[in-house]
Image (cartoon, rainbow, N blue to C red):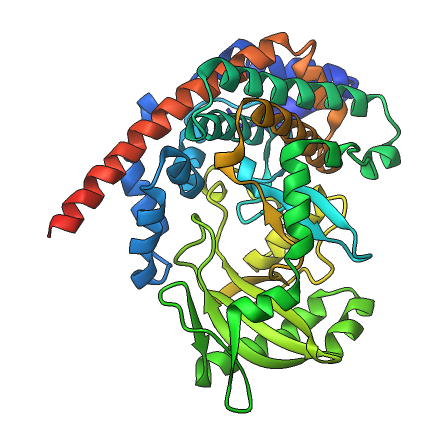
Length: 442
């Protein structure tokens, strides 16, 4: 049920917390556990096929293969399915900047402007203004599926989801009583003491541009080119490469002035095409190697195609929503993150929109296989804190806290949803696996 202008007018005189309480009439917290999948008019596979229409046809097969590896792999690539399913049930109407693809592997480490490692939500391809609980439901489901993938016992999976929700609710309650600017600059401490995060930070320290230079490129003739590792990496030359390089001018204008000066000190050396992730497979994804102060000063830029958010068809668009989908992602990312990649920007190549960011500049994420019981529970707590901080930065924490209340009913509803939607994801995954087997037999 959308949050209409008529509803807005009835609550303008109330406090924000009271407004949050009023939203319980739109969606009782006990109803958070209900799935709307029985109302589906399209199957999961139909939705995935529809979402693949603007992708590189030769790579769609690879995307399906990666999604077929496990229910969690399917979940990562099936945002269009979950967005549709969420739209089939009422929502609170309490809007924040959604991450849109909130799951355990979309948190990670990266380097800030001052060189220090930052740990935060780091993937915003699906970001859009929408109901806060959609992110909470997706993250909770991902924790359930990640635990199952790591062969964690069911009781520990339930405990991990509970800890995620407790952290989210507890920090949101804390934010509701804090000054606005204190919320904006709030830092989650003790991250280095949490074993899964500490492992990510160690890995991120090693993931620098010089390592990428060695892994992604090679010397041929008098210069460097990207390696050829089909289908995941290839060098780009000629007209295609020139189009990518021409897009750097528009990208530069999307940066803050002082960062434009830094970019101007680099010169492009080579262009490549690189397949990344699961949900993004099939979208056009270029890499540009630039050199600054000599060959030992590389900068890798990722120029990643962005399409409309999977949620756009189900949510009203704000008047200020940018036409360039890369700009949409950048603005959503900046709204939720405490500090963003200093080279974060956007551009366009032909009719397509692109996000631009650094590639592998001290970036690292969690290995699902390493999330055993204690690690999963500790990591789930961090997920709750990071998501709460992002929502509080971009939305109204007092209104969210008013809706959540003591948290008990809210948590029960989300836990029920996470368990049920994890089961639905597994059922949808089996359909994809069955189709893949038929394709292989042909």
